[in-house]
Length: 493
Ligand SMILES: Cc1cc2nc3c(=O)[nH]c(=O)nc-3n(C[C@H](O)[C@H](O)[C@H](O)COP(=O)(O)OP(=O)(O)OC[C@H]3O[C@@H](n4cnc5c(N)ncnc54)[C@H](O)[C@@H]3O)c2cc1C
Ligand code: HEM
Image 1: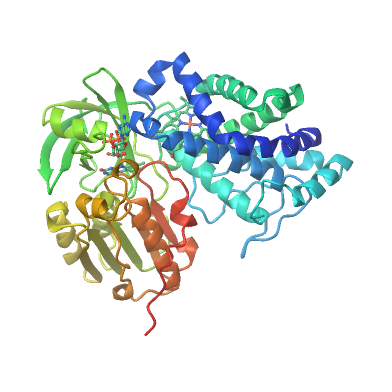
Image 2: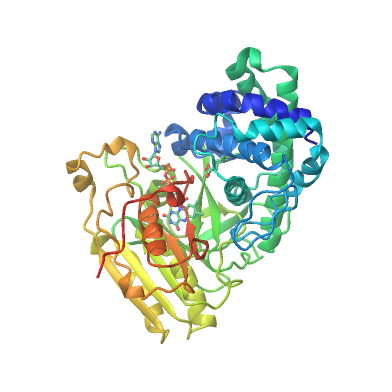
């Protein structure tokens, strides 16, 4: 349990940790993988590690979660989010974020432990001038960001079947990385305070992962299953579409529209790499997924799993699959008019949602906006058109933006720094007038992060409340979808 003395220690060391967070994350993963090379080979995404994306995410997470602990556990009340009534230390479940359940289990007791003490009052005063809080975010904003992070991490860890027993190893290597970075400032008090935060985070994450399994109707001990590829085809330019059924007598579990599953494949070097793919609709007995192949064309490294799906698998082969995961689904939300905005391979959850709506609520008002670089790259266009045509109140607008790697190159964007579906592909303002948006619309977004940042800003500019714009990120979330002001403004009439 966090004490007031822990909080004081956290306050004084957090600026040092924030300044060294990138080094701590790099060092932590280096130690972890030196000790357990199998984790890099079989659990972590080697491409994301090579590009430093997971390291950056971990650094950001450490600072955000510690900021949250320090910022919300001192004093008695935090400013109110519009429409909420939050008391510091109260369980924070029920926020508008479509998360996986409570993120506040650990903070309830810690919050009350220090209330009213002299140390807490001192801590409160110090927090107001905390040097790392350059932009001085309101504490509700910090708490909300922390909830978003925990919820998202829970989804990621749930999809990888990470259980409580694996956390001790993390604690050991993270402690060593903190010690190396902080030097003399890593006192016994600092070690104890940060360990307590780590354990609190661990407990929140484990609880949230279990809530994800429960929300997805998954038994906690469900594990990887073998799935047989019954249909394999290349659709559009470089998109592989697979149909999977159970490889044994027990059918694959049913899924909800918007969910995804992890697929684990054995690569030629023996590594068992795992990636997530959205479930694209179809009958319950079958899963359909589609993967855009990240072929680096000799300019950037190939994506490992998507090229493996293209080059090494075919009908009759078997892959390992996790149970379906994901709490961003439409079936438990209101019946508001929907706008589904996708770009590129971001079409997959949209197809899954449309397939569900066409079967269960065919009269639902839905506007589908899909963006693609070229017609040749547009996967599942016929399927999309047929689904929309089967729903009397559904409309579809497809836009081809014409972006390409050579266009990026011409703009001077360094190709080594962008993913193939990344920056530059969507340079034109996104025309949302076709959707006739109102504050009651609910929007689901899926596509490359730069696209979603632009689209989200434009949607909010058109009057949709931020809380009604939901989005799927197909990889580590660096926060730029919500953080970016892209400069786009609604054109004046
Ligand atoms: C919830 C969720 C749902 C998803 N749904 C879908 C879906 O429906 N369809 C879909 O196509 N994708 C989906 N994804 C993305 C998918 O999981 C994979 O990330 C994607 O297929 C790329 O995987 P890959 O193994 O081919 O690429 P990776 O190997 O992960 O490579 C990713 C990037 O890293 C670079 N890279 C790789 N190796 C190195 C290296 N050694 N050094 C430097 N850079 C390197 C590559 O150039 C590439 O740009 C989803 C992701 C999530 C989280
Ligand atoms: C409190 C403890 C933990 C924290 C704060 C944490 C944090 C993170 C973060 C920030 C990411 C990157 C998120 C992203 O890619 O979007 C991540 C990914 C990951 N974590 Fe954890 N983690 C913790 C515990 C664990 C444990 C115990 C394991 C067990 C091996 C684990 C395995 C993974 C894996 C495999 C990924 C990569 C996901 C992928 O490659 O797609 N984590 N974690």
